[in-house]
Amino acid sequence: MSDYIRERNKYWTVYPENIDYRMSRRLGRKIPLDFAVENPSLDELITACRILRIPVVVEKDKYHPSNWIEKKGRIKIPKLSKISKRKLLKLIAHRIKLLRERKITIKEDKKRKSQVDKMLKRIIG
Image (cartoon, rainbow, N blue to C red; front, side, top):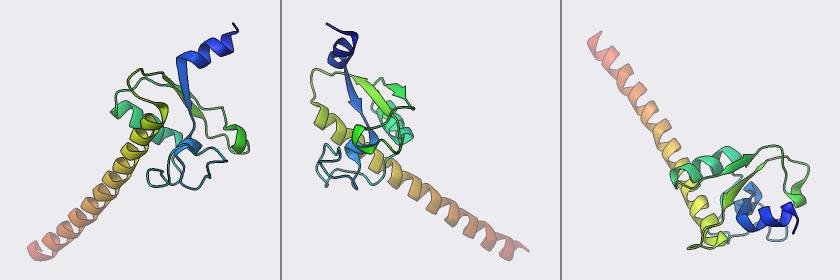
């Protein structure tokens, strides 16, 4: 058995295209549109996996076979016995959505804080 097949049996390969809302199933999306995320980055995939406490191997110079023009990279995740790859992709996509919502709320909080600071400066003098 070759090294490629051994490695393939140990890891799931996850590309950003696997959870990208803009991609069709034919171009590599693995989950339904309801769960998919628009234009996920490799860093978001890594962050989501770290939050879920899933060990990853990052390969930034790789590309998805159907999207070889853009080298978005990929991650390798050790195969988990209790969950399927599609369920894992749904979990990762959901976590990325939550991360994006959190960033928006952080930005809004900063805006509110700066508005409050301006009002306090006007009142105080």
